[in-house]
Image (tube, rainbow, N blue to C red; front, side):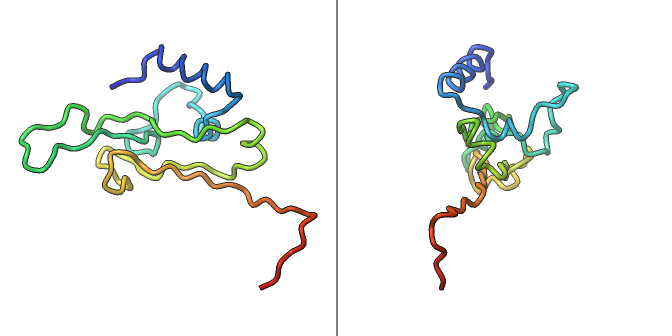
Length: 122
């Protein structure tokens, strides 16, 4: 699998048309030297499923990585409401993937306090 130039351009057009940003990428920009992160770092959300039990062959894409799972929000929302975004799985051995070939992605929002609403006790 791959993320072709056409697919990247299409995704960029979707983000632009919706005035959206990819939260994880905005908070984790590409390194200035352009080098990809180490394979054990949490930067992909899909690693390819292992072969089905009882099958002697390895699946075609087992262990390969792509970032397929996203949170996309308006830029103003990112700046005002997003506290953090983490990819919880990592590595070619699928640490934290929770029995899936997709890693969980955790988006934490800042608490929003409405100053005009009365506080409730209890």
